[in-house]
Amino acid sequence: MKNNISLEDIIIRTTLKPGDIGYITYMHGAIYEREHGFGVSFEAYVAYGLYEFYKNYDPQKDRVWIAEHNNRIVGFLLLMHRENDSAQLRFFILENDYRGIGLGKKMIGLYIDFLKERNYKTSYLWTTNEQIAAAIIYKKLGFTLMEELESTSFGKPLKEQRYDLILNPVS
Image: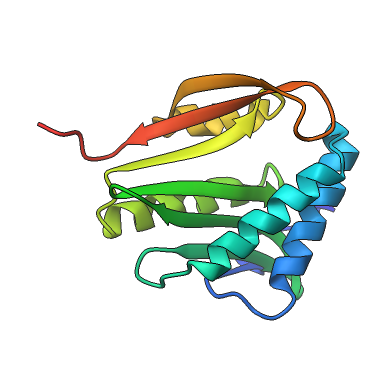
């Protein structure tokens, strides 16, 4: 399918619609179970995080990027405001057939643009040591690995990793 997909065929919207939270939760559960053997606890973690985002949503500070192809969600990313002019990158995911065509790069670019537009000083994200391709993208953007924790939170042993990005260093 990849060979037939062009970035021009994909729409990226920035508003949630009914069904999105459930579908994004399902997408994470299904993909992470299939690709990494994560358990239901990971899906519950995503569901809770999306609830937290929606409950605290501020359109001036928060944003979602939802990639759709033929009216089907194929990618997702959100920016959630945190304390001290910091933003958290959460739930970045692409369906397998949509990887390697530049969609992830485009979505991360939109994330970074919004960070700068809203004058955030820092951004951070949590991922795992199994997300090697994602970590490469984050490092290219200037994110630095700051913390690693041994974990079994998602149904198997792994390392949770925190990456930070400093946008406006304090003088």
